[in-house]
Image (cartoon, rainbow, N blue to C red; front, side):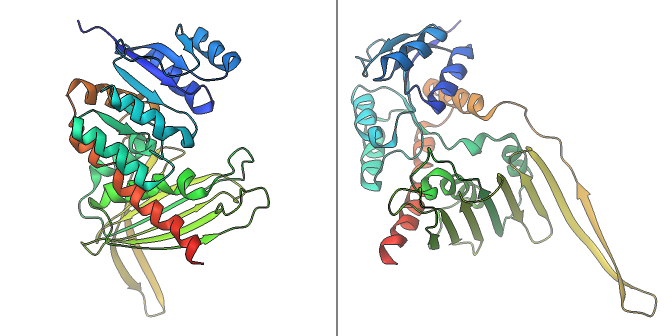
Length: 320
């Protein structure tokens, strides 16, 4: 039997605590080291899951993989340190706080053929997996991701929310977009200077397919919906409830001699493919990439397209 992978986790915040739980629960891994500069927070979380606390990233000679869930501004030096020691890396989105730094990180991982993933978690949503399995030829994707304002998140909505659906649309259509147009809204007085609260984005693909993505953090309730249109079907996904409904319009007939019509639509509700928590599924994928059961090069290549789009979206504010 293969020994569990020894994992180092960087970050003991909200996301880091979820990663710690998932790693500790995995039969394929053990949480070996938890890194956080705050001793009170870091040591408490480390003790909870049987790990050793460290204030900074240690030598990784005895570590099999690293998960980075630290603040975005710390991603670049951390990622370069991890990859510099030839260790597999799972890093939360965005990969770095700048597209050039993101490209530099990915270039190093490519040059050394090091397994690397980005925490684009909606890829592992059971409803998304089910919907993708049902797809034939998507031509129009629409996604809405709205949330109430959260004072703790002061940076822009593009990296916080929009990136997830941009990534989904790219994966659904099967290619990076050839054209991106976007409008940004700045409304909340509590947001950091220049940080967008609303982003409306339209993407066109080489196949002719279109995707419209709406992200907002000034909504009054949480919305996470995805619609995928084909010529003869509509696949609707509720990412919160994790359910899928498929519609197929079959006829429209006039009734009698008056202006009445009867429409018929077939509705299918497929069984959801899995009940696994997305974060657990993502970590299992990381283990597969490390062990060579999944294509590491393809996984790395899937990271950049959404980052390029969101970087373009954010650049719009400089043009306004």
